[in-house]
Length: 198
Ligand code: DC
Image (cartoon, rainbow, N blue to C red):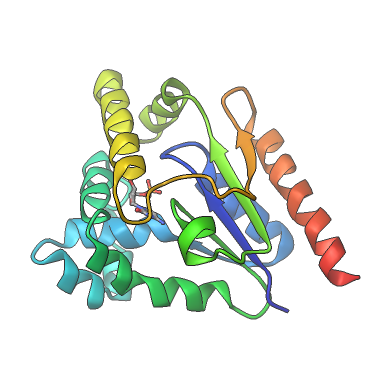
């Protein structure tokens, strides 16, 4: 069975947590597509070359979650050739037998426009900055600035900007616990799986 779940949204809205949880619940494979851009961003040198030659070791680096890696990822992500170099890998992953969850910015709009389920997970910039601050520490104001700056770049770029697909279900996690957000996402997926199985 092939079944693709596309989960998009801004930084620290809860996409990663929700994606991992629903992938585990339904037995689907999970790809954090942001990690691809982070790995390209921190690799240095020519980003297009880095995207074309990305290796498992690049994706296993332990500094990919840092604030700097997020900013570097957002900067290389505006380059169309970088996005093009990462496209086939993501599309192949989406067709994995047994189902796949991909989370990112353009999964429902560009990578998998035919995804079975599309979710757009969001939250206020302040809530997201608080969560990221808890995760990585540092100065809260700097984290908030970085979140706002990254949102603007990701949503404002010409190629595959971050936006909700027209047929995406919106989940605002600002006032939700992790369990509530996961339950809402899982309910949308379960409903669609039920229809597909009939
Ligand atoms: O989801 P994340 O914070 O790990 O993503 C890091 C950056 O990578 C994000 O600011 C923009 C870019 N990105 C993208 O352009 N498209 C994706 N599908 C995923 C991430």
